[in-house]
Length: 101
Image (tube, rainbow, N blue to C red; front, side, top):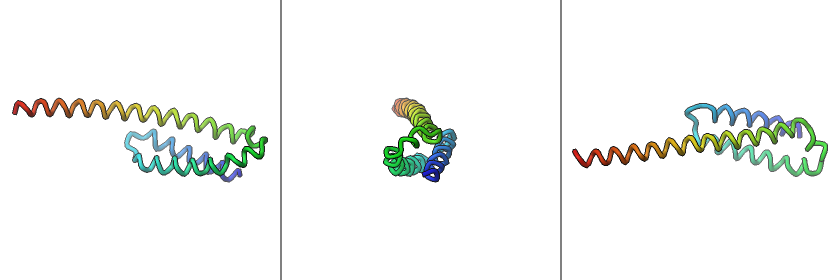
């Protein structure tokens, strides 16, 4: 159980570092998030059966990291969406200028 929580913590740190870089591979993030979900799916039944684990600092930290990662991913998604909107607008402008050539 502690080993799985440590793996979760390590994976959280890796996801966070990857998301904070300017140039990251979205597929790599998806794979890490999928792996994280699998870890959580294996931990949740154990935590449900052992209430003392649910109150441990390590589990509370895992929950806190989950919230932070969700916020970071939402923020990155918003930034990427805005960049895409600007790109599309710029592309339309180029197409307009090409009409005059």
